[in-house]
Length: 339
Length: 278
Image 1 (spheres, rainbow over the protein chains, first blue to last red):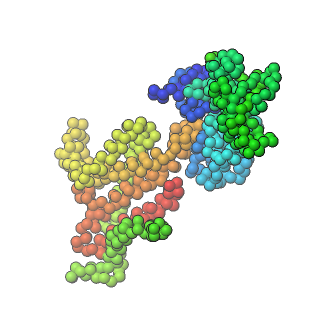
Image 2 (cartoon, each protein chain N blue to C red; image 1 turned 45 degrees about the vertical axis):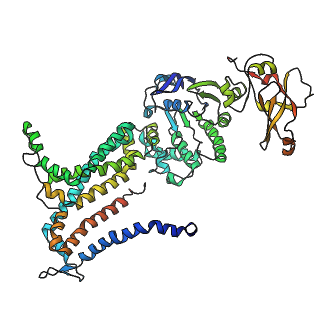
Image 3 (cartoon, rainbow over the protein chains, first blue to last red; image 1 turned 45 degrees about the horizontal axis):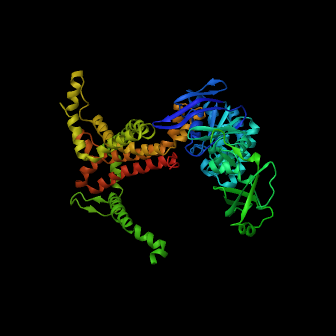
């Protein structure tokens, strides 16, 4: 799957502003971004529901830019599931096979296999209205997978589920993807979801791609200020503060969990950086505590510490205390191209 | 305070007036009609005899002209309904799924506009259009053609014209309610336009078509003005109208015929499962 210079304009609004992308075969690829960042529009162009204003879409080297959805070897799992309410679960799943005139016997077996894969064996005769949200979601998945497409597109498929079910489905989706070996392109605004599930991901912002890479790479080496802020929580050091703390000009990000709280007089190793400040705020989060530290050099830094041996009272008592923040030099990351 | 703690009392207050209206004015008149149908008229005094009898129904069944009128009316209602579906569906589809917001609004006004004009005026205009040497004849003359003149064809045309909005609006509302994602899903799974229409859009819009057909069908069954204006043939409505003055019980019995037909029609529509998706 390859996108070359894809643009999409709706009237005056530019939804997608020049996207180049390569998705490898068999990959679990996520498109991550806030709403209105162009990720869903990009997905809809890959599916064939929207025609790009400019650019090309290639599937296995073949230009499919203008190919209608019914002739593309691509299937979609819709955000609202889009199950046909007047058909049974079996007919929903078998719809693609029926339309492409697969023999009846083959249809029945393949529908049964697809339903087994999503753990809904024997649900053929139910109506979508009799299913729970999670079950509908799985029927939608089976309906798309039964056609054995080259690429499966998923448009925020877990968006309507509650947290617990979401986490279950994340694992299940990943397992199914590995089982069938089909390329998944997964649209989400949930950075945690994208990090846990994907082989690689693209971060979208304002119709452009900010960074493409493996989850660890994107998290640990954010290419832009936007990525640093959107994927996980991050501290930004700029201008005079950066000069004072890091010792050189530029824009730097430090993840809150990479920073240690230490006593003012703590020793700092050669491969470490440090800054002093006063704890302005303590937010108790259960397994972690987040401290907001006002640096003496100016600006606030967020620091997250696991509550390994700290009780909540101890953590809260730290408010107002003067501390030294220590982190390894490798964890203050310059953002390239920004002063 | 009392109302706050007694939801039933609250409900009663809200519903008292409409319920009273429904029971007294609406069901009451139907009941009187129903009772009348089983009474008879004294041939000498012309007064209504309040004794139970089935004579009216027997007379309706054995008299050939009543049967002919009945079948003609049902056939006309069915034909008008079919024509309305054929004309209304594409318009409704265009409004619901294709047209831009602006065009949709304009079309909605265009569809509703005729409903603002008086029914009588519209029926009379058609009389002028269809009459001998009328507008239609005048337009067709250069081509060596002639309009249909007064008769069943004229009745069919005028009814179709009059009831078309009652078919367009429900179908439009029904199609509007089908999420676009269903159409995209069908296309995504390999369904071309026609397949998507036959397998997804049509089955999901059947309840709306049924709702519209109930309007066009029953409105045609009950009308007596249009046939009087553009035709000389009689429909159920005309027969009732003529008989109200002469033989009220017979008129009442005859008016139960369209009522029964509509009830049977509703039952059939229900059996087809058309209401399940509602």
